[in-house]
Length: 474
Image (tube, rainbow, N blue to C red; front, top):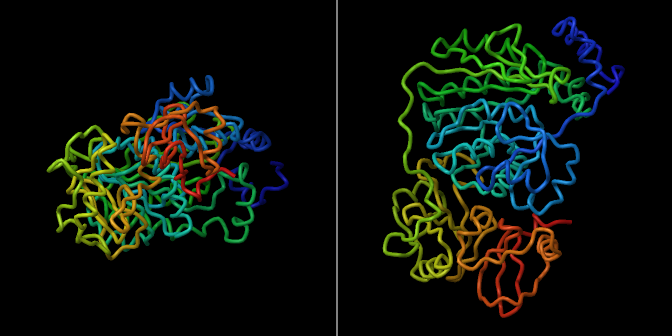
């Protein structure tokens, strides 16, 4: 990007912020922006992804991120549709990596859409604990839901609510909270030039009050001993260091938790302990991160977590509906009929994953497997709580796309597994009916190179495609 396209007021601020480094920054703005890939460790490993695509340069501030140059090579691969990785700007990987998530914790991602950071947090939870992924925008929350389902996450709630209402519902509840706040976006000028127009229309400090409100509400929801991580993709000191200084002044129960200076990080000159990323000093766009600690004793962690995929038996040997008191916390609950129970039992006979009866909830026709350590009050707007198993209609169970993405190949007794490079995989992703010479009947898990893509329903040698229409390859 040429200097002439950048606002004069912005350039003046950057010159003051960077001093002698200013010209180096301007040079970097004319270079190509980097793209990144973060491996979904709920499904595979960084080493396995490198074996698929060849050696890649690692992103230094996360253990499962790589730099990539051709996004289309990765987004057109069946492994992308299998949820093995997420395309993410490299600097954005720093926020969730620095949050320090541990399995069993309660985590809130307050401004979560489209889901890059939230899916990284979920991978760090390893299926244990409870994640609330919130975004005020309903349209963005729908994109968030898709990414959570694609990544095979079952212990999350996707809400669409104002931060103040969340704070009323979850006082002193979360062990860690990520506030990746809406901001002026100066760090993204190189990669997304359209952001410049919004900056010019609204002014650089347009989001400051919103950020203050988010921090205040996050403070109300954080348990003593918990961690609050604040990040932006802007250089504006009023949205970064000044924002944190003001918060600490008003909240003596919080202290700055200094972030180690890893490769690619630059220590803030204005507030020691905070870090910045600059395109002239590392291969990434602009970013700011501050990590705060709330004084007090942390909460004891959950031990059990989400149901074990290897669980061979459930209570009474079948999937049922239990714990009516728990179900009353969810809207539109109904009691399952004997036909419903039998339909679920027959379906899960083909799976090594058996949901615990006490975690199964019915909302109308939808069957959910609820997280062990969390629920959402009826007073809040939400899109999903836990794992959508499928739908029960007229005594028949139809599995969901989300369930297919949650499972592993070895979770199904008779999966269909074809090479990832085969034409059958492309036809499946386009929603076409397939033929097979394999014996089988009913629902089967369809896999590419060992990784599930969705379900098919077999009738003799025909495979009816159950891949979600809205996800199909165009």
